[in-house]
Length: 307
Image 1 (cartoon, rainbow, N blue to C red):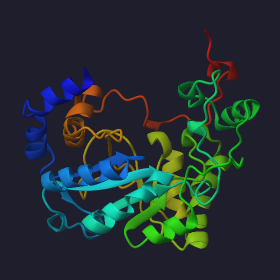
Image 2: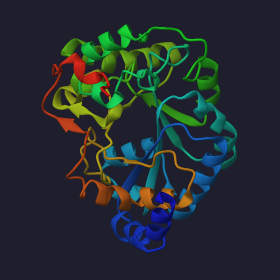
Image 3: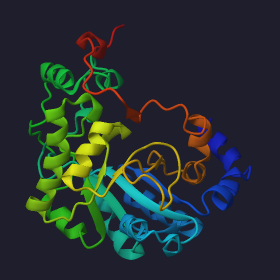
Image 4: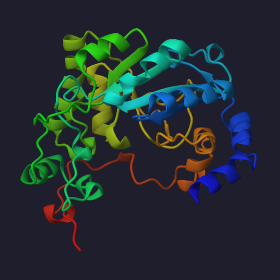
């Protein structure tokens, strides 16, 4: 059914209108996570035909210079969150197409056999409810069912050092905290550790110039913005609906999620912003994003599934 819906929307002309009217003088940032090599090639080819793909650095430079003319019409930035092992499999596509992409790395998970907490499966745990707990409570509950952030599993989920080195000439690597917490659910000490230490670790251990941070889950607060600025980041990437210009708040840059789809109809609809425009009522209804509350405490029982 969804495939039919996306096809109908695509050929209704709405994505074309958004592309030519809304996106034409804006910069669109897309969010991917872990697409296959085949999907990457098909996706990059489609997007490069419809948009002008630029690097995140190109955009930041235009912002610093306050030079909108440096940006092409229908400019688009491609980003990937987390640093999944599958990202390395895009290497032949990136070499062939020379498409600039930014990958935001979880500094405490890359080059280890540690796993992302949100991929850990247990029948009694609700991932959506875990996100509403304080980070401390979340980790306590996960520990009870066998998961710890520092636990080494049999197989990695993230790229290792050699893979990152091989991709460095092709990819702009940036920061996605250490262990991917929901930052507003961290206390001040935890938030500082996740934001500041991630940058330091990626720079000192991997030799990467870190200028940007993507807020995990798209959740952030004024405290997290302040910590990011103090740590020396130049921008912060959200998952708030919308598009960007050289006048945008650099620590609230907007981004569209395309859910790693291999369906070109879905990609066309979501990359244009049409889908999120209606789903979020033009950004007015989102289940994540900015909050003025940090490190809230919720009953741990809320994270357990009940039949």
